[in-house]
Length: 395
Ligand SMILES: C[S@@+](CC[C@H](N)C(=O)[O-])C[C@H]1O[C@@H](n2cnc3c(N)ncnc32)[C@H](O)[C@@H]1O
Image 1 (cartoon, rainbow, N blue to C red):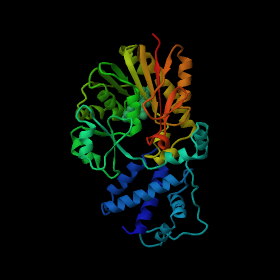
Image 2 (image 1 turned 135 degrees about the horizontal axis):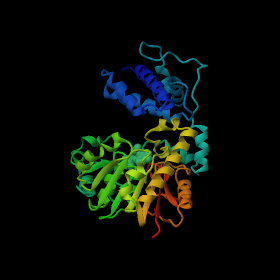
Image 3 (image 1 turned 90 degrees about the vertical axis):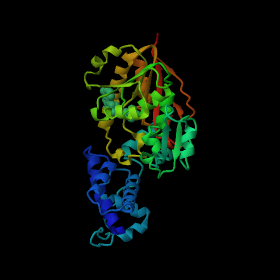
Image 4 (image 1 turned 45 degrees about the vertical axis):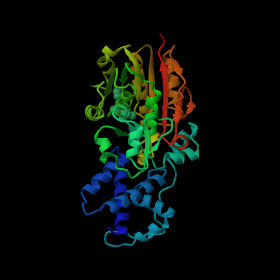
């Protein structure tokens, strides 16, 4: 592809990504992969170049741009050398008119910037939310040691505070490593590893992972439990949950069982678990403001209404979780968001609604206290943004 054709491809893909963000369609990565699957003539260098143009443009625009071209013109304002690719050539974009609309640069839509500020996320932190995410892996201590894996992987750096974490050079193809096929490593952001560690799951315990999804944290918890005890991994999403058994088998995790829940009947379906769990882990659905480094277009999917619905769902799953904790047992609440309404305020409301429950201060070596919990941010901790809190049920 010529440089002009790459710019035009990025514009067309941005149009699809913007429409999907507006209509709650597929993620940018999925749309890009589909587009290239239909265009086999594009080589790996073309893919990389187009992807970079797209993500650079997305990161740069605060409000959702009207068109892909307006987004790309914002990038041109920052990187004038791209302007030459608007050359009107057969596969390239038509030349730039001086009066053309350009999207507004910024870190997020205005209403979200207000929410971030109100949650004490200053401008430097807002910028870091849109940085490039590093490539972190968790060594599966059931099958290997961190030293062993680090010795196999050139450039691997141990992650501070994480006994099993390694940061890899960004171009590493983890899924092609023999250690990956052998279940010795999993791709997992340092923040995800830290919140699993902070939960304090111990060997022999009975744990309910209420929002287990594909089991990323279930597997981390199982390793920390030394594969002893039991984990009931639940979710309402069949597609996600059904990936878990295969992943668990690869990782040598033998203590996880799955249970698909119906979103209106969870309490009934979990009746046999009532007041039984030593630990209930709630990795709740959230706005994902802490993962914009990976999905920067996600900030255009949010709205006041959607955020309110997520906060209500979080309250709902917390209520279900509370009933499953045994007296003296713990409930760990996690969101990959830095907004207080999903984190500190949610826990404050829980403590008000459940008198007698207490919080445990968490000190996993990173993060800052926020309300009754702890917040991790990309700028301060070099992790995705997270909020985590641990509540203990009275005896
Ligand atoms: C942040 S994701 C979980 C990610 C997962 N723990 C991991 O580490 O990969 C939140 C999950 O909560 C699930 N969920 C939403 N509502 C739920 C409910 N009422 N009960 C259980 N799970 C729910 C979603 O389907 C989603 O998979």
